Length: 87
Image 1 (cartoon, rainbow, N blue to C red):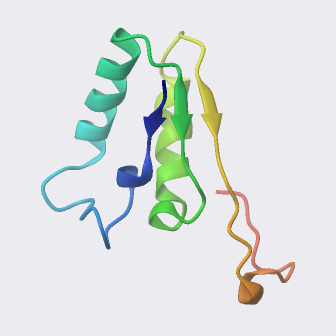
Image 2 (image 1 turned 120 degrees about the vertical axis):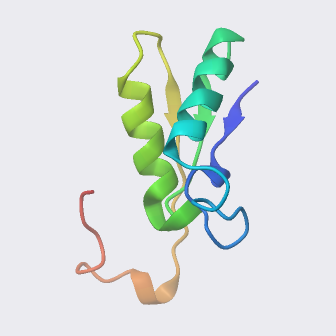
């Protein structure tokens, strides 16, 4: 069982920042941990990287082992070396 993190930063579909914020994301993660969820699925396109940033920050706040899986969507205009940066 895993926790999907698309909503953790996506403003277009999930309206992140309008009705819920980082605090609600953190609460959802905490409840998931309490229920035994240790797997978080995210992607660099979810919220233009915001979901990954949230997953990393929140998972660092717990002493529980958490596996965070991410994906890369290779759009042709994003394959140049100048596109990539460390958050």
